Image 1 (tube, rainbow, N blue to C red):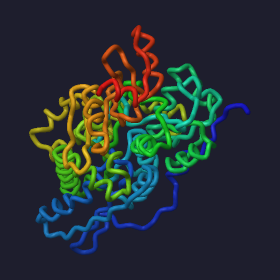
Image 2 (image 1 turned 180 degrees about the vertical axis):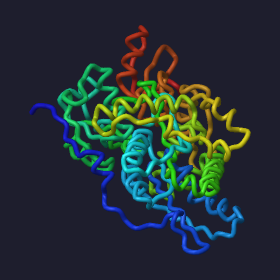
Image 3 (image 1 turned 120 degrees about the vertical axis):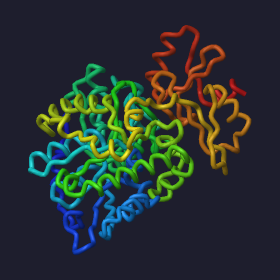
Image 4 (image 1 turned 90 degrees about the vertical axis):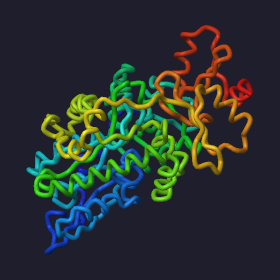
Length: 447
């Protein structure tokens, strides 16, 4: 059958039936309800959603305003950003969090309907794009992007994961519209399709690739960090809400900063808290949100992230999901700049910590870091029954991955991990004498 795109337009998702909810624009007397839309299982947004909610920081900030108003927070949990945008443009949600591509659709939809929104902060980001991964079934023979030609690939059209798929295929010389059969599916549906064999590969965002790999239901085919293009999630607010209740928005951003500080200071406890709230394994949450996780959390609207957002517009335009988007008018850092105070300039210039190998010992409240993947393997080999999870950064991209799910290469006495087989083969091709080895072999060499 000729490759084709099965398209259920992301725009249609924005027109989902609306459910009633409170808004800060519609308080009764001295009581105001602030409605926050978030995605509990999109764990790159936890500092503006799941973790923030569990800490109660926003409620505390609102109570501290001392303006004579009683505030209530209505937390609305969604699977994707599209319904959050639909609710925002209907005046039903005041503040929402979502990924970079959905943020652009949020901006375009708000402008189109005369209900403009503003990007007011960042939650988590990865400067190379490692938050998105293309995976295949564990027993799949597919080993590179070239192998996807003519195959069925599940993704969520209009998401950052779809953007990764499109760009990766283009770089591989494959037409993303005609070279594959794209299945436009929600992440959970795509995961089921991969398990059932009705999809040959799945391109998705945090935390789906890591979750499926951890469960042994998938293996990585392509590490999104190979694109070397930033990807992030952020917080968007209705413009009318921001203008009418700036103190409330500032309170939210101060609370987000508190949640960010808590996550960075207590990464294991934060992972456990998010796991409890979402049902995701804490080991998967830590892969993304840990001390050296794939995601870096900082509310500052860094210029490099804004520049990446501008580059994303062309992908959405080509897919006919948006027209032109004025990113400069969409981005508004006034509120987060005020919330973070004097530290904001320093935050703009800050960079993620270098990647490192980590072991999470069973029963421990802290992880152990290692200077090399080989040193981690030596530790794991000595404590095989005492390791809850082990993480190693890709030797090429720095993307953290589970040590027992990585592709290992032996180069003399050096042991190097890779997320995807193609990058491992590329290394071997460029380094005479090196070769791919199994995880068991790597453990044996390190012990």
